[in-house]
Image 1: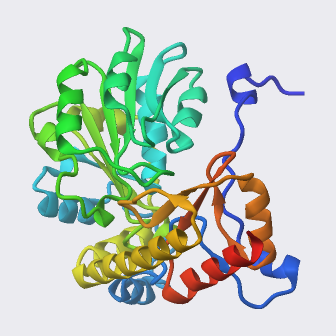
Image 2: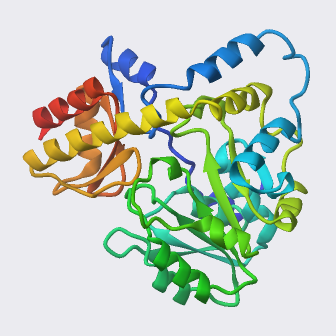
Length: 357
């Protein structure tokens, strides 16, 4: 038996959402609905699909552009930053891991809200470090309490804004106050995977702190509103010195040719992003109304999913929904998260929910 460090042996592997094909095979049904992984229900940009189709045969014998030159160039122009202030990742998920590996050593602490994205404590524990979980307040990041939790052992603070799995957000005033209190020698990782879905006018402005020269790493992704989850590509924005250090351990070809090609094209399709946002808002309004009719407590969301608080066991409800061909996501012992889908998918979820409650 090979020796495994105790902090690795204690990790629980990430459990992905159940694949549609597996559920249909198990139940012998022809059509099921997956609302578990916060994917864009309308799919990727037609421009991204066309770019992939044009590229899919030729050039796959060559390694991808290890530096992502053209994608970083386009992102830099859109964001008003320098190319050496951008780092590409195999989804923004990989960049969380790279940040922990770059800036933490065994025994260090990282502060995070809870519940929040399950990968934060996993990335920290895999380094032999301590995940300091600060309870959410009203299902939102309690940034004051998180600032209180920072000690001389703290190296990173992870903030998901909006938060996954609750869908809540922190306003600019709250985040500005946190940054005033946060020591300047720690890294603040601002995870903005759902940034493009936000409609709240007082949403926190993280780029301001980047431009002020703070040690902040802003993470965004092409997996959500851009509909490229299957290609795994995201990016980070940070000072050039932070990016330089992270590049020391970034895998040489961590983003593939097809991923870069699709992301480049997707950035040119603002209409697809707007349509995705419209479909999401329409679906959100429908689900809010139906959940209220069914008297199910739910949280106002700034994302493409809704967090529901249950009276009973979420695992049991999840299993009953599976039997109806609907895949949702348990988000705690008495909480369920459901992705906002297409109208027919949302209706299928509500119908299944009515049947099993």
